[in-house]
Image (cartoon, rainbow, N blue to C red; front, side, top):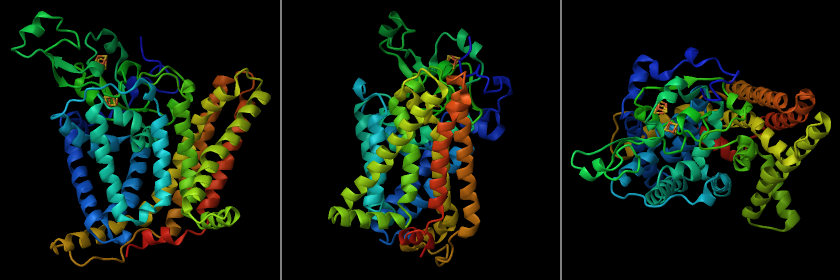
Length: 507
Ligand code: SF4
Ligand code: SF4
C-alpha cells in the first residue's frame, strides 16, 4: 500500500525522482548526523554578530549589519532558496540550536494545549509582525531589528522550554509558517523512497524516534522494550517532532527539513526528492499531522494572509500609502499612525479577501452548478492564491536583494573596522547592487510565474470539484488572480518612498 501522494498522477513514480540525499558530496553531508548543527553554528554566529551590531553599532540602517542582513540579504536568500530547493532555512535555523542546547538542561513537561493546535495564533503573529514592521519602520532601526531577533530567541526558549516536541515551529513561529506555505511551491520534498519498505517496517522510527535500552536498565528490560514509552529507554535519535508520519506525509506543509526522520529511519528509506512544485496544492488527500487542506480554515487563512499580506507589504513601500494615510488622517481627524495602519490592514487582510473570495465562491456555485457551499468553496480555492502570493514576495524581496546585494561588503568592512580589524580595507560605500532597470524584468517574471501557477492550481481544483463545468468553476478564481497580479504590477511601477531608496543606497 503506497501513500496517496506517491500514487498521484501529478507525480512521476518514485523510482524516477531526483534524490538530493543520493548526490555524492551534498547527500553524504546531509546524511551525516551532525549536518544540521554544522549548518546552524555559522548562522548562529552571523545572528550574534548582527544582534551585537544592531544594539551597539551605527544607528543609520544602511550602515548596520542588523538591518542590512535582515531586511536585504536574509529575506532575499530565503525566498530564492525556497523557490529553487526547499525549506532549508528551517534546517539551518539558529533558534533551534539554542533550544536544543537549553533542552539538555531543562526537559519540557507540558503538551501543547489541544485548543491551540492550529495555525490561528501563528497567523495572528504573522500579521502582528507585518504590522510592527510598518508601524515602527523596522527596516530603518538596527536597534529594533536586533531586539526583535533577541525576542525571537527568548520566545523559542520559553515555549519549547515548557512544551514538548516542536511546539514553537508548528504552532507559533511566523517565519516558519511563511516557510511552510511558501515551500508548497518548492521543487524538493522529504519523502519515503519506497512505500513497500514502510509497509514491512516494524519500528516506525521515523515518527517514534530511535531508542535503545541502556545496559544497566534492568527494569526497562523486564518491561515491554518495544514500547516507545517504556521506562529506561534512551533516545538515540528523535523522530519527527512535527508529528508528520512519513508514509502518510503529503507535501511540505509543516516540514522543517530538519532531517530527523532521515537519521531515525533504520532502512534508509527517506530521501529529499524532486516533485512538481505546487502539486500538493492541487490535491486533497488526508495528510499526516495536518488532515485535509479543504477542512483546515486556519491553513486557508494562512494562505490568504500570505497572498494579500504580500500585496500589503509591497504597498507599504510606495508613495500612495502615504497619500492614503494622509487622507484617512484628515477624514478621521486622527494624528497617530497606528489606527490608520490598522484600517489599511483590515481592508487588505479582511475586507478585500472577504469580498473577493465570497464573490468568486458565489460565482463558482452559480456558473458551475456545484453543490458545495460558499465557505468550503472559498477555503478550497484559497490555496490557489499561494503561487501568486509567493510570486509577489519573490518580486519584492528579490528587488531589495538584487539592488542591494553588495551592500554587505562595505557594511562588514565597517563593522570589522569598528572592532579594530582593518585587514579588509576602507569601506566601499559605492558598492550597492544591480541597477533597478535590470531587476524590473526579473520582478515581472516572478509575478507572471506566480500568476501562471495560481491559474494552474485553480484549474486543477476546478477539474476535481466540478466534473460538469470545470471551466465555469475556474473562471471566477482566474479573475481574482488577474485582479491581484494587475494590482501587483501597478504597485511595481509606483514611485518608491524615500525610505525604500535609503535601504538601497548603502551609505
Ligand atoms: S522508519 Fe523508515 S521504513 Fe519505517 S515507516 Fe518510517 S520511513 Fe518507513
Ligand atoms: S522529521 Fe518531520 S519535519 Fe523533520 S524533515 Fe522529517 S518530516 Fe520534515
